[in-house]
Image (cartoon, rainbow, N blue to C red; front, side, top):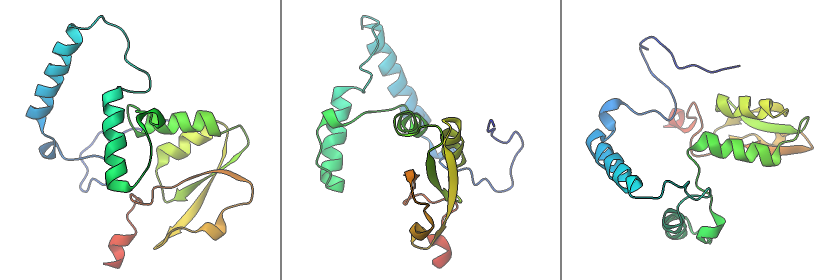
Length: 160
């Protein structure tokens, strides 16, 4: 089932992961895009590394090592074009037709649709103030998709 963005103006826009136009640095973005286009014009026209630029992966490796205490090298990282591409890769590797995938309920609808498209039996498990209710996870579950820092709608805000 395809998902579409609303075509009319919403009174309250709770679209997850979206920012207001005024929050995006358009001018800085334009300069970066033009720089990248100039750099690309000087290249041989070959495809980039499928795992992502090595300099970017090295920078990410250093950053998560410092900020999150994650020990990894750039060879352990794969850069995707966004969360949906990353989810698609995970689903293609881990999901087999008929397997059980648990997602948060409420949760991220595109993830649910993606796992179902791969043939999984997708089960929504409720969340509470502590996150996913683990006692409700069915036996034999192959994959559990959670977003503990980005539950939608936010659960912790109600407790403030």
